[in-house]
Amino acid sequence: MTDELPLNWKEPNLPKYDRTTDPQEHLSCFENIALLHRYTAGVKCRVFVNTFTRSAQQWFN
Image (cartoon, rainbow, N blue to C red):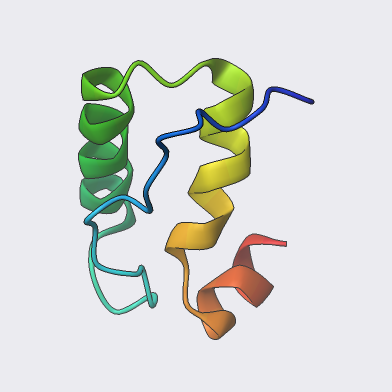
């Protein structure tokens, strides 16, 4: 996906997911933020992976 981030984009105010909390809750919070800010599917894909800590990114990949 090549959707550009909006010019006024700011990192979501969402705690990083570190695998110690409920992943479904993290996803639900992210989806609410994405809906509020009207992220396209491409922007959601680009932003979501940055909501993980290093160990969670390794798990996700």
